[in-house]
Image 1 (cartoon, one colour):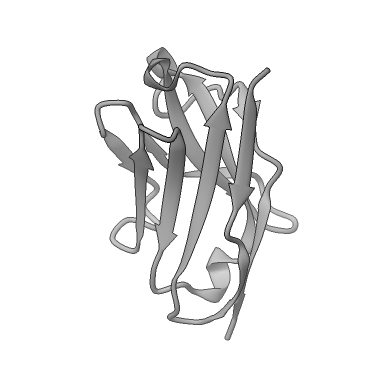
Image 2 (tube, one colour; image 1 turned 180 degrees about the vertical axis):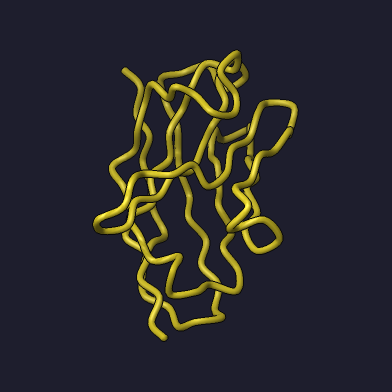
Length: 121
């Protein structure tokens, strides 16, 4: 059974940083790419960043240069380091997994439970 368990959301002020973690179990890490999505109220879910087993990375234009996606393959955990946060980054963030052939845009098969990120101005 595949499980993606997220942690690290919270409340920060504009300009501050936050790191999300996603611990994966039940899947072959090297056969999957991992993505981070977000969904703000009234908006569609969007892909923010993705990473493949060879450390190839994808970033949406809105976060490039501010967010960093990286992984620890030994413990099957993917991270999203979010720097210089803005009010428009406020959303529920989800990690997800897709077979590596679908990197980076998906479709994504497995999803975490979501973590709320709130950015106050």
